[in-house]
Image (cartoon, rainbow, N blue to C red; front, side, top):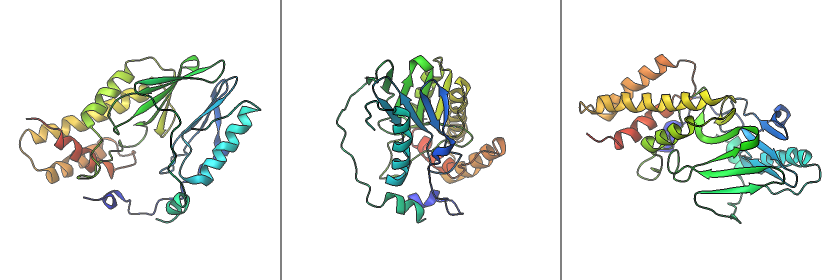
Length: 258
C-alpha cells in the first residue's frame, strides 16, 4: 500500500490560504478558516500584550507570508515570533525548520497578558500530537486530532508510516471531550463547540467497533474495508475524505486483539 492509494480521482485544488476570510472568534484571537479546501488547515492568530502566536501556516512559503502579514497587522507593534502540481510548487524550496524550544508534556507560552498552553496529548493521529489552549477565551485548537464534516485522516502507510494509533487517538478524544471548551477549532472543517470533539470521538468509536466486530469473526481486511466503507458512507453521505476509511480500517485491524 502506498500514499498514492489515497489520492482522489479528481486533482486537488491549489491549497491556497485565503486570509480575507479571517474572523475574530474572541478578543484578539483570529481564525483564518480553511474554507473546506483540501490540505488547507484552520489557522489561528492569538494575540497577547507583547507577542502574537500563529497556529499553523498552510503549505509553503507563499501561504506563510500571507499569514505572517495578517499576524503582523494584528500585532500592531508587539513583538512577534512565528512558530498534482500546485502542492509541489508551494513546497518548492521550503526548508525544514529547527525548533529553538522543545518540551515534553507541555509549555505555557506568555504572550503578555495572555498565556497560551501548549499541551502534548501523547500518541494518536501522530507520534507527537499536541493541542493549543487559550484559557481566557475558552478556545482549543486541535490540529488533525479533530476534523469536522469529514472522515478522520489516518496516515497509515505500512511498513513505513505507522505512527497513528486508532486506539490511543480515541483515548485522547475521550479526555478532550470530557473538558469544557467554549470554542473548538479543528484541523479542518467548521469551527464548533464541545460537541465537535464528541462527534469525532463517536466516529472513531464507530470505526473501531465496526472493524473489530468483523475481525472477531476472522474476516479478511479487504472484506472488512468493503463492508465498513459502505456502512460509514451510508451513515455519513455528506462527509468528505472517504479515501481515509480504508486507512482507518487497516490501522484498527493491526491494533485488534482477539
